[in-house]
Image (cartoon, rainbow, N blue to C red; front, side, top):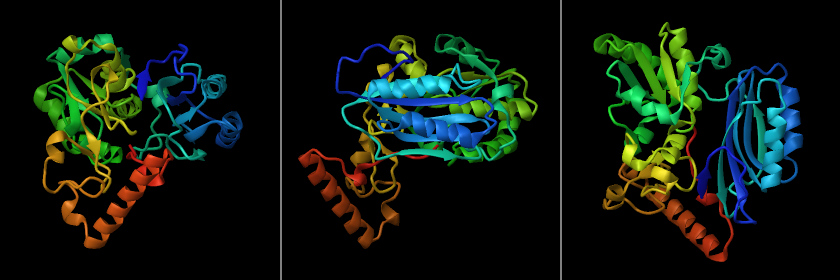
Length: 324
């Protein structure tokens, strides 16, 4: 799978499935009407998931290029959505079984539905300007992703809250993050996440908490890794992604991590060398939690996936990814 920037260059593979991750914080007055419009735009060729909330839209869709671009054009025609953020990738086969358009309280869950990122988010920082910002000793850099993501890779010197869920971020900041600001004497906060949506919402939260100078990485780590030469990069390790690549490195080349099919967590090369790692069953994280019945069930699932792959068909047991 190849990630590209937000552009519509012709894909050299005529039969490629185009996968678009998109979001935008913008007020939606009638969620039901927007949901119905999106369902109509996506039929019949586009699959994936789109979330609709008062605060905006978020999701991932896949299909033929003309079909997914039709959806993007339709969303950008909605009031406030002209600047929809889109990240593109291609694949040889459809990664989704169906199309789901769902109404939710939030498009990325932090548990504070009264936040208004469309009006009160922090300042975007383009990838080419990010290094200068985070090198400044007056900047406190915070990773808004979860613990397993930070373990795969992070910006050098970034604070790792080690949260299990993005919903835990407000409690972490109130308990520890604010104290770090006081202790370090930082003049500003810079935050990042995989694609930009979590850190954008987190900046609105910090501003609501009275932190005035808050910045976030435009396009997230993925755009940084795509556009920043490796020789100039301040990123260490790989970036976890929510698809079969598991993790990517500079230039968005597929990384070295695989996925534990038991707990759906990333596993490094060292982790796969552990005697507790059994492909398709368990890793160091989850081995102790697996019963004999679990192991038998997971081994059978792995066997069925292998058979399906050999036949060139998809198997639902191969589905991966964790919610943000």
